[in-house]
Image (cartoon, rainbow, N blue to C red; front, side, top):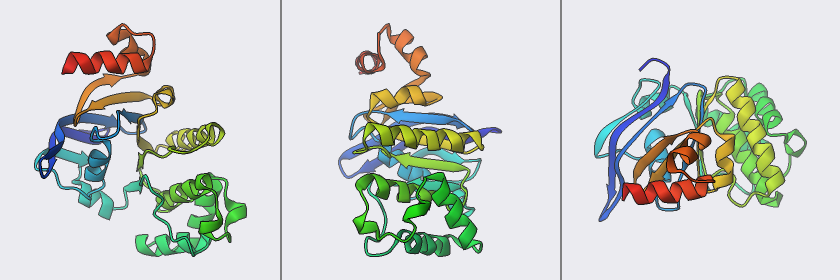
Length: 239
């Protein structure tokens, strides 16, 4: 599996009566930006949590750079940005990032914080109390926290939900710059217009990836004029 950042085969996960993942297959090559696109409840977050070592599948194989997810996390290979900002609102931006540096065992704290804030264009808000920031700025702080330990794989779970179009464009500029430095990115979304920004897509429905390819390849395969129509047609064909 040389050159693969993510390998998933036959992954299954159940929560009580709900089968969140039903034999999911997906591969992501190093340095790619891959979008995992599908409606809410399709299994995107469950799969990302499995990659982050937070959920243990009942069946199937999952590896990150050839390692078990827990081993990849312990080695500092994975950065995970959750849907909700995992920050302490009463602390400043810098205090939050110092805390996460300590958790991750970073000794060069100043450099790590400065580089992360520079990446998300928030150096001037270093001493701002997080609770006073806009939702978009808190999202940028969350991204900075995920980047502190310089991960090789960045997992982004719905990173632009509630973000205005201009800030969404800025976020994708950040993601593309990171990919240019060799970081692999898996981003989940239900916003179809983000698809064109990804190198490749995995369309997910009911816990299964129903199709993979570029946006152009998927629309051509479905004989559709746009990705949303392609998703509907491919989902109907897979039912």
